[in-house]
Length: 323
Image 1 (cartoon, helix red, strand yellow):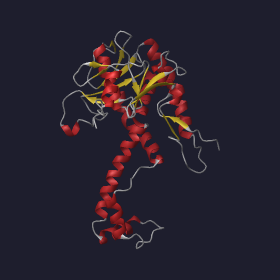
Image 2 (cartoon, rainbow, N blue to C red):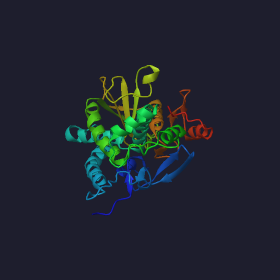
Image 3 (cartoon, rainbow, N blue to C red):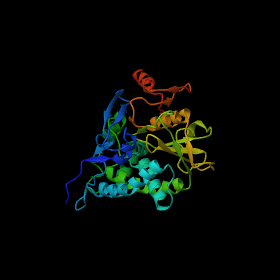
């Protein structure tokens, strides 16, 4: 059995290389930590990873099976991304499908998505447990119906469980195995919606500013006003939504279901600021940029820079967050 790999990059190093000064993964980029309000230089190999993120803990199974599979996929998709950046045109055929799979991967197999799923599962589990402990009789029925072989139906005291539940000194989370299986299913679910969108490349340069990246680089926003209960939850298959993903410091993807007039267009400074604000808004914690200073769109619709953002963060005001 091979030795388990420890550092699992949920954002590919070759992809992060597009945001270094030279465009190579061996070079450095700037990291902005929104929690600690700090900024420093780092290499792609030292960021956007978690230990054992995709490790499989099961007897007789290669613990690196997911990481090895992702490495094979990255080997195929990396030249596709490189061609898009150098040729400044969208791929076709199998290369386009590879690109869509990469977008799907970055939409699902990231820490932020796992936290969202765990919260949802925890909320449902707590609601079910709340119903189960409403009365001693209902609790005994729940224990009996659970059919857990190594638990005596009379051994789980109702009052102790009720007290434990009301203390709220616990958390309910999905297992790593569940998350890994879910991310495969999620890719299959959203891939057709990605393929059916109308895709466009946005190009920028030194004069208009550069695109930034983050630890959660896919942004999906409404293009129309919606009721409050819809505002934070656009779906990949919904009309009137726009998906953005930076591909490098000078190239970004944008997609919607409605028809577009051009597949490639030059982004002005305001558009770059809007895309950067979306990328930062969807980030979990870290923002990556090729330069220390980058532009974003502030609440007053003015274009701000890194110092403006750091100033807001120092005041404990997270202007880019929606939750």
